[in-house]
Length: 434
Image (cartoon, rainbow, N blue to C red):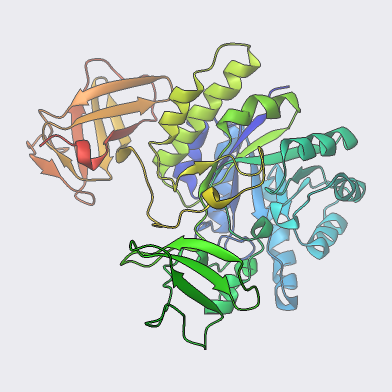
């Protein structure tokens, strides 16, 4: 069985690129009832447009409605549901038992997938949800391969979906209270302020201890501003931490990348591989879909897969450093990135194809380009290297440079692109041509 590759759709354009580059299905949310308010800007009309487009491509689309609502949202949820179901999404991704019950009563034929927010970590829980009519469970991220195998063995008729790539929430199955505590923005209502990514400083006195108003103290360990954290009620249980002039990032989790485990997961007959990232760029959607499409297809066809090369390709998109999550073992010190919350990547997103006419292609610029830069133009089936020696705007006026927001730029290729979908990129800034 070939697993489904499920990609995020933060907007229609991202959905189009994810599908063009290999996704079997996409998932999207609506602001009122999804846990990612900022990343889901779909109105009802836009949702209809998205669903219609996906179905014309003979792909599937799942709508995320996974908030834990207070009483005042239940009636508005039902009103919205009455407008959504006629649009015929392929499934709803839900977490709240009450909303699941109301949806099943109102629309008994609607397919429901259990959100990762329900933190399903054992086979008995999976059996319970199957008995109440859940078609698919998105398993918690806190599971090893062996635990996933057991859940599948105990629930052979239940579809299982797992995350294989993307950002990891610091909280257990994403059910975080930190944002609400610090800012009043409830992550479980879709308002996460990403407090785990903030800078934090170790406040210390001259003798190395913190002010008594704080619950932790920092004792200097080296001359390089490395400290040991000690929680007030846990004496002598030290946690090493490094701090520079910018502070430190105590809860800044690295990103998930399960490329080394795809074959193992396929052997377990997992039904769907899910990628996180509705707020990421079109470039992210395209490259990540392209890489995992190739991995899945080659393993399924018993062809050799160059995993190191494909992993290197994943490094070209923004990431905080990759880890395999809990698939291999318990996460330890290396699962966090303490020095910075900035994204790392080997390439810069240069532009997105807007028009093509034979060998002439027009891109919308996404990052600054200079004359003589060499860019890669990547489509689902080919990659073309182009030197910007004769870069012009769309009116054929020569350009020495072009900045994002300045409009479009035109390049002439040696051969026509075979796809209407393409992205342009160049290597990291430190390797740019002068």
